[in-house]
Image (cartoon, rainbow, N blue to C red; front, side):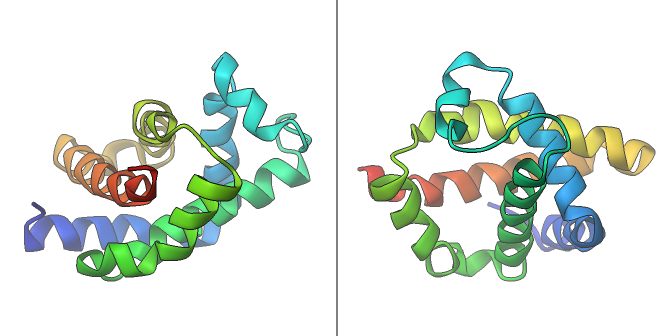
Length: 141
């Protein structure tokens, strides 16, 4: 799946995201909520750009991605609570994770990391996010 070099690269990227998690998360969510079906999941929140709700939720998402990257081999254990929340409480279509949000996050990372977000870094993050969302969606089966 992920090589040691890719895991290190992902960890390096994630460590850079922690201090700006709210900003990165809010920007990725801003791209995500453009899709008509995605807005329904946030009807209880103020989803205007840079709103407190959007920044807070975006930060939670980024910090969960960062936490899971600390030991990628333990994704299922790390994401167990989030799996249940998203599958049974929030009932979010798992296709939205991979097809939409991961793509929005990759675009946001490219904007923030610019030249540091090389093709190799992009590919590694894409592989990691694919594994992350696959585990997150396991409870839907």
